[in-house]
Image 1 (tube, rainbow over the protein chains, first blue to last red):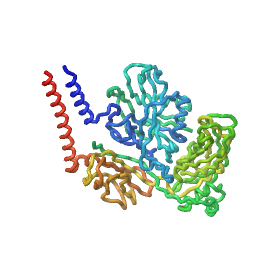
Image 2: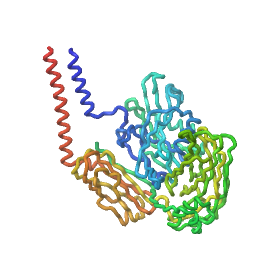
Image 3: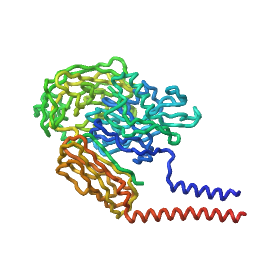
Image 4: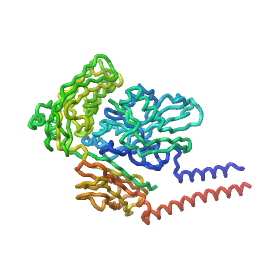
Length: 236
Length: 350
């Protein structure tokens, strides 16, 4: 067979794909909404983070399942989890969306919804987590930037985060790349916090509801498992 | 391209405080509730308390922390007593205020320090300090976030900083009787804080509330629209409390290229659910997106606002349908042409 027809058919296929506008990266969910409940007061937080800065149920990355509160800021949370949980390695950047009514006077606040992009931090790539080889724990904290923290009279100074596991996420540990296990990632970070600050500073439930329950299931290379409960971690 | 129902539930909501800040410390002394306060924070609070009733209910003691050697996190606590039987005013809230004096060590390196002041394990003041190199000099930048002034940033070169802090504290931060004041310092990088002093903390009760209702539901990327389109998007406002909510304002914001108007912009009273429609006249072609907000000056729990974007999608304008139909037709025509040309070349080759 001549090469030309192949080239033409390939070009036509590419054109069809371009018209379809498909994206291989983002995930699709049926319960995109908001973190709600008595803790949110005047503020708003989307219950998933996003692949790009576009709110759409087929553009989500992972569920929001952590909240750091009382005296939290993005930098202190990252420093604390690096020192006390080995979550120090950067990852790829995703996007959180939120509305914080606190910064009203300066004009640089986020009182009408804004985005924050963050690559988050993960444990050693190709490390071992709960006996699973080639696995790392990855969380991404979000807050309007600046000021890198939110405030309300329920949570005090707070930031929220998504979390998941990565498996075989590097050429250093070849194998089929898989992602997800959100509930397990949340538990690892909760355990890090308990080991360091004690049970009085970490709760694996919250009056704030993530509204992002995901039953255990595979979707391509992604294993979804999320209770919808938001783990509370207190920064004193 | 149309998205599903956009829904937002906020238990109580938020904050539209317009605060006139006094520029003179002398003016602060005119308000009895502020008597004896350090001048900087007195000036900050003057505009707040003059706009509402305010009463000083007590004072927490001075607190200071000297840091000899570098340490990642240090804190100091001290109990204080407020009059027994005090209660949060309803409507209203507590206000806490103090001046925080910070001295960086002369040999401090670059980095970030986070200073927190709170009571009863609830932080209500957080100061971030960054020391950075800039054009061969060390620059110090510090900021606070609160519901009184919002996000405030200062910048300078000095090693001694005086930062006025004032905020509506979390509910448990002020109690009748025994309370515990806490000051914490966390150092990141090579920065070194030598000393932090907190002036006596004024605890005020005020008729202002930090969270008048403001709830927002957003529709983004609802669908492609063309100039001249007229679209109706239904919404629902629901008060889940048995008590009526008074003086509700309904506004559309962030509508680019659209003229979007809710059918009603003011409700005297809201009990149960109310359905309405936002009429949208498209001025500029693009992707339809906007926010709908309901606001009231009354703090309230359990209010929900709902935008049904599916309904809008279900009835696109005739012009939209025409544009989509033409676009799809052109795409199919192009693909067929490419395939047909390819097959012709294959046949010729044979």
